Structures are given as structure tokens and as C-alpha cells.
Image 1 (tube, rainbow over the protein chains, first blue to last red):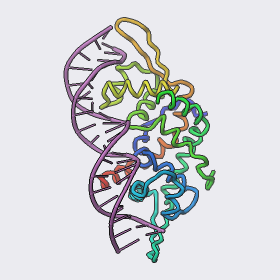
Image 2 (image 1 turned 30 degrees about the vertical axis):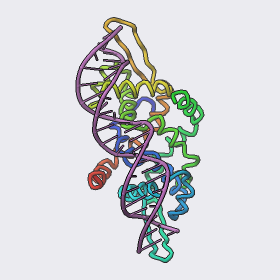
Image 3 (image 1 turned 45 degrees about the horizontal axis):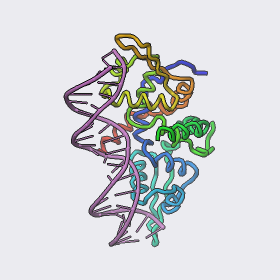
Image 4 (image 1 turned 135 degrees about the vertical axis):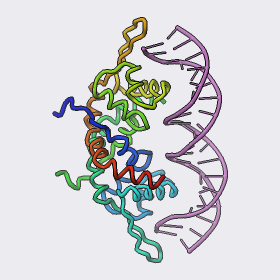
Length: 115
Length: 115
DNA sequence: CCGTATCCTCTACGATACTG
DNA sequence: CAGTATCGTAGAGGATACGG
């Protein structure tokens, strides 16, 4: 147990600048599974609009966590994947994912109360 | 190395519901250090307004990660601390903190470019 | 000292239509 | 298929003044 060592410095703000927001965690998670085409992602990330999907992908690309490969074919074909940097982020995210999963019932209950 | 195991299930959305937003990570970090009084927190978390501080604290309290102790004295004295649940969250957050710290320069540079 | 109460801005996000 | 363009909204966050 690491116990009472503080969250020294707290790079959380920096990290949240990269994976914060409503969609990025989900997109990252999908890409952590495997390389995906645009339309494939759109179907996998339920409820996202094309505008938001492309916007999030562009931002993640600019942040160096996502790689975009355009095959320049007709009809168009583009594949998205995680960079090594992106993979390292996904790994850093895993404990938080697991914490969220472990306590999702409790969290949802509280959110429902608070409205 | 856990390597290519996916971010199974992705409780990230649940976790971000609890520590997402501009201020909660910083407040959590300060409370992970030690118990704090309201005014103390206000000074430690630079730039936060009283409204936002109390709002974030109330939400974190409702989520069960922060405990509020009112000493019912005059002048008023209230102390905030992390619950066990809050401590477990802080621990889950540590790798992400460290990732952010390790790459803060790169991230800030990208944010600056993107504007 | 520890908050409440208003009012205001800004931007993340959404809906819809269109294009190479 | 893989985007772009435009318009609209809700809520997160900010500034300031007041209250027990």
C-alpha cells in the first residue's frame, strides 16, 4: 500500500485537458481495443454526432494520443488508432476505470439523488 | 506488464462524474494532503470563488468522497476531509496524476498551439 | 468565518443540412 | 464513406453583493 503519500504536484489538470469531456474517454477506450474506421467508431460510440466524433478525434490527434491513417481510396477509408503516447495514457487510466466500474452503482445512485 | 488488456467496461464515465470538472481534482488533491478548513481551502485552491468551492465541496460530500465537520462554534469553524471512499479514489487517480506530471510540458505545448 | 443569492458570460455539446 | 458548415441550447463557471 502506497498509503498516505500525497498526489504530489497533481498533473491531473493536464491529464484531464487531454481526456476530459463527455466523449474522449469512451473514444479512447474503443481505440484501446483496436484500430477503427470512422464509421465504425460512430456506431460503437452510441449517441455521438459526426461533428463531435471528428472534433474529439482531431483534438486527440493534435494531442498526439491518436494516429489517423488516410488510405486515399474511393470510397474514402480512414483508420484511427492509439499512438504509443495514447497507449501510455490508457494504461494510466486503467485504475480509475476500475475504480469507476467497482463503484458505478453507488455513483449512479448519488447522481440520481442529486439530479 | 498488463499490456494489451482492454479498458474493460470503462467506468471512466462514472469516475469522471465524480472528479470531472475544473476544480474537483485540485480540491481532492488538497484534501488528500490533510484535513482543511473552508477558508484554508479557499486560499490553497488559487482562483476559485467561494461559490464554486462550496458547490464542489457539497457535490463531493453528496458523492461520499468528502466529509464535512461543523464544530458549531462562533466564529464558525468547519473542517473538510476525505472519507475512506475518497481516499480510494485518490489512490486510483495517482497514476493519471503521475502521467500528467510526466507529460505536462508536452501537453501544455499542444494546448497552446491549438489555442 | 462560512457561507447564500443574483446575474452574466462562454463554451461544450447537440440537431440538421450539405459535400467530395 | 468520411467528413464540413451553420445554427441553437443548457449548464458550467465567474463576479459581485449580502447574510448568520
